[in-house]
Image (cartoon, rainbow, N blue to C red; front, side, top):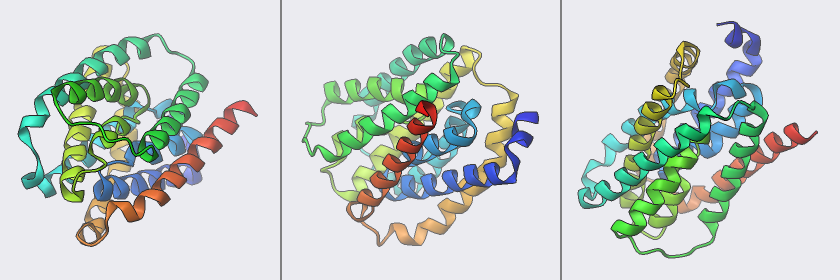
Amino acid sequence: MDEMLALGWGGYLFAAGAVFAGTMLQRLAGQGFGMIAAPLIALVAPQFVPASLLLIGAVVGFGSTAVDRAAIAKSELVPGFAGRALGAVAAAVIAANLADVGMLSVLVAGMVYLGIVLSVVGVRVAINPVSLSLAGVVAGIMGTLTAVGAPPMALLYQHEEARRSAAMQNTFFAWGMIVSIAALSVAGLIGLRHLVFSASLLPFALLALWLVQPLARHVAKERIRPYALALAGLAATVLLAKQIF
């Protein structure tokens, strides 16, 4: 509680705004929660990243997935799920030996930059068990360490029809949050402070899911992606500058 009180109302509301914006983008585009929320929250409360964001992200992911269940291709889930679980275990081992909060902030910024690059390269990668497994492993490592795990799957599905793309990415996102939480819990890296902080921010995520639902039927992900990437890049740059200067 002392760490939350130390944030003050300004810091807390800033974190709440980051969760709100990230949730809206995740629901609309199938990615964005980690890329927006992680660097912004790391600016004011790095001690809660990635654990608290993973806890909130699990709810965001399942809330987003439930809307488009008919567009989920079940045959593609197993290799992606398996890869994500393997990556999460590897990342938990790394995280258990990473005590420097400043280094974690740099990692978050780096993952956001990588995510932006992957989102704009336009490379078409065939969706098959091998690519799904590899993307899952990379996403598991990125997501568990920094809460930014969507870009590898976004790369695979960026040329798919919008509803299918968002549904599949949200499904992998939801599963990724669960396995990352499990891996960090086993490693002893999720505690009561993370649960309390995430619980206090969860209403802002639920509000965003409710408010964004009417927009989801009319807003194409291609229209919002440039703005989302620009915001994520700005947040990562500010976070990186804070660590350097």
